[in-house]
Image (cartoon, rainbow, N blue to C red; front, side):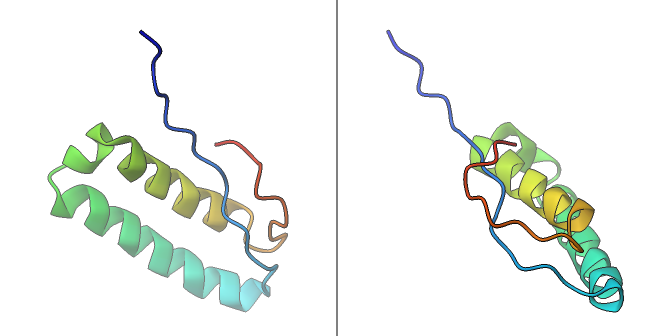
Length: 74
């Protein structure tokens, strides 16, 4: 029986300034905290939930460079 593995890709977003990235990093950290704490960590059991968290972390890490490639696997 084939396994249907959920594939998670990096989001496409423009490069931002350092000031904007600091602000967005705070917002993304708050979002990740709410996703994990608000669901008592259960969101990590769902592949889409893990993907959402990975995408937010990717956006924080690459905020100033941006991403134009929708095929970057996470």
